[in-house]
Length: 54
Image 1 (cartoon, rainbow, N blue to C red):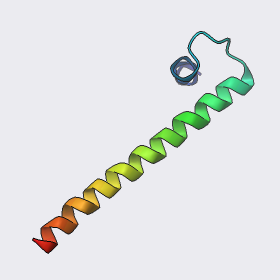
Image 2 (image 1 turned 30 degrees about the horizontal axis):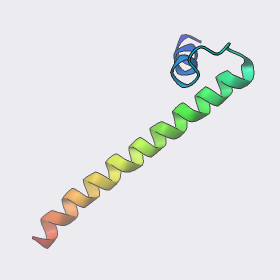
Image 3 (image 1 turned 180 degrees about the horizontal axis):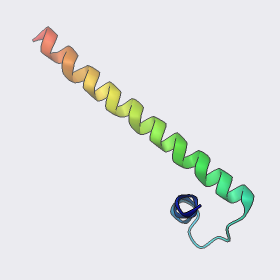
Image 4 (image 1 turned 60 degrees about the horizontal axis):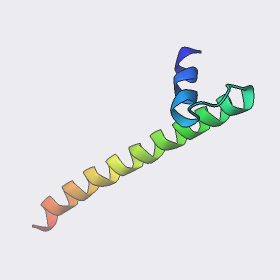
């Protein structure tokens, strides 16, 4: 529950915590993590592909 409260504070600072806003914060955090993972994977792929074409 503590981590969920931290996510809520990150995404909705100053707003009261409700079940709905906690769920929205969790969704936003998971979405951001997925986008970050995709960006890192793309960067790694680009780095390896540049080695092959040089």
